[in-house]
Image 1 (spheres, rainbow, N blue to C red):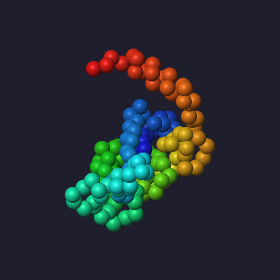
Image 2: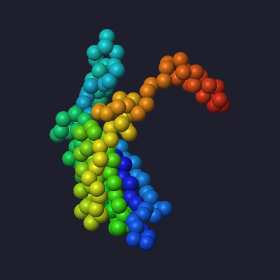
Image 3: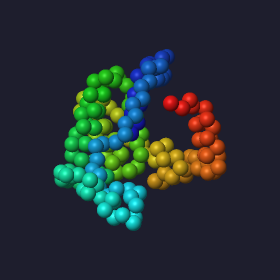
Image 4: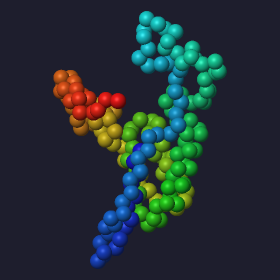
Length: 165
């Protein structure tokens, strides 16, 4: 979720952003996770469940896997309230978010927090191509994956340029 705030100046009857533009970039809410471990060795099923690595029960999140938890939504809303106190009350505020449910929910919670302090924000725009440039949830990719040989060459050159410890 991106939040951009731009103070407005009236200059000869025109509105313009002042030079003081602030950009806040957030991940997403605190979310639930499933006990399944991704990319575990399929020949060792005992390694694909996080419960096998803990002596205490894993949390019961109260929501489906990968959804925002109730506390996670509250934390984002509280963050919106906190940010609203830092931003010029006349600022134009824009929210841009990915299209996954947790990101949409996070942007809405952030907007609720901002508006509860009197800061008006535009409706969030959902732009998955900005967050996943290779494989967005919808829309055309902004980038293409470079060839494996190109990635390997760049990684090798980078490693060669970094002094080893």
